Image 1 (cartoon, rainbow, N blue to C red):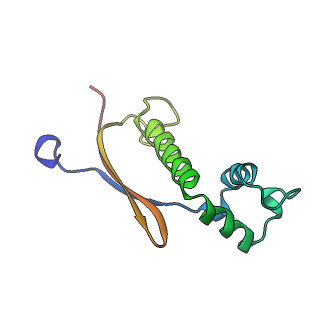
Image 2: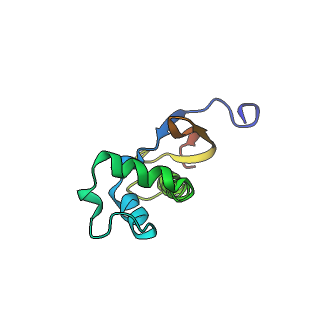
Image 3: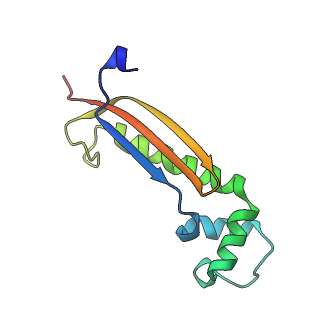
Length: 114
């Protein structure tokens, strides 16, 4: 990538925080039969941990979709792109799975429009 496109402009690392993502916890509650009558906001730390550890596939899919949404935003030429007049020319993503959780590393090459 460096040989063809030059030095990367940005390096990002994003870690998953499933225990505090209320939308994910709500999805996990719907998929699980545990804790009937409780909402995601009412769960204590132990219950949240149990939901997340019991369904790692759903957590991975959710994280992957969040990463995809972030990349769509970064690639966009719209006003909500944080790079303003620059756009993402190319990128490389690596998602790691470790004991402590998931994390993503991005290498981004941005370029000014011609």
